[in-house]
Length: 225
Image (cartoon, rainbow, N blue to C red):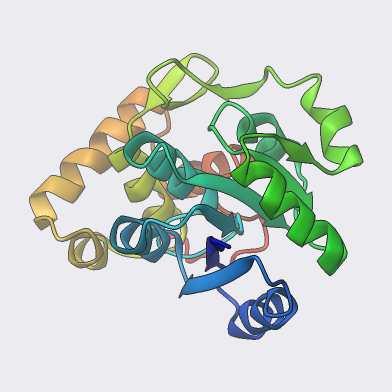
């Protein structure tokens, strides 16, 4: 029997180990890789081409929502199952239009997780009951047809979302440039474009926007500069 290959994307190692241990007992599921942040999840998807990515939302460098968007855009055969402790409206309202096949809360049982992986691999969608109810009214935060974040009529590209997350996490331009492999000048230009596009003129405002749009968690420690 061909096993369902799974990539675990979760920034806490102990949680990843727990998921791996739970799924180890499923004869038809094989964990082929683990990612500690969203960018690594995209890279490992490129290398391993798993059938299903089990994706947390709140991760450093690149959040799980943007990682999901990139994976679904570049690797449409790979299904994404969101598994998160967070069900804030900013997250719930985005998850379906991102192309994720399901959204489970981390309180779910191991049996439910294995069943959900099998279902999304078949092409079905799986949502926790509480998530299903809240998805019915999603319209405040969504994506446009090109798969770009939008809120209050503003659209952010994939690169702008990455830059915004790193800035909102308190990283200076030099570090953002190093993380993304671009020049300091390019980051500064993205920063200026973000502020102009969102009509926000300081880093604290960008941080508040990133939290409200679900790009970072409200509990993420940030440095306002």
